[in-house]
Length: 227
Image 1 (cartoon, rainbow, N blue to C red):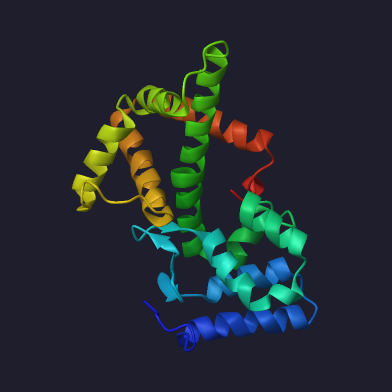
Image 2: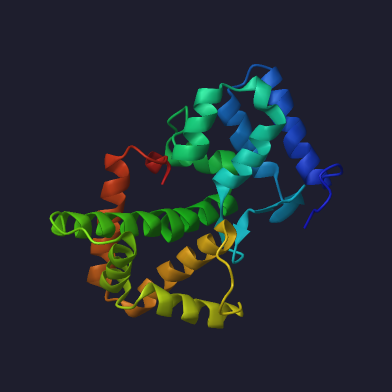
């Protein structure tokens, strides 16, 4: 783990240098970014007061977080609207097929990227879809958002969010009253994905996954063509 922003590890220095040089030579910034991601090695680092965890549980690659980190080094050289669309909506400026995307970021990172997509992006989408279904059912008596979230968790996982958080905290060794920051939330979401795989029947898993991916496609979010 690198904790000194002024002295990145050699591979990370190479990644940043490659990104800058490739853009300066006229290569599209998104292609240059993916190539730099391939070069990058460290799983996490601390810059200032912010900690970046690029790898979750040793098998999930938060590639947009690394993309954000690398974009900071070339911010004046890339179109801001394209950068914002990528980082906040997962909408790349170029449509790449699976083989192109995989070759650019590397096979290992591509597999870890798939783990992130199915284990976190799709899991978050599934929760959103079910919450939307509940809101429609309660159109004349919506109730509060907490009750909608609780019902969504019961429908997806057959368990309340509170109890799932307790199980998660116990398994991961977190204090029961541990605050849920963004990094912990992603870890929890991936844990929920694995929990669903081991507790739900295959037909239900397939149906829920299809529902979430259909929702993502309807929102034109994420580079699903690269899956």
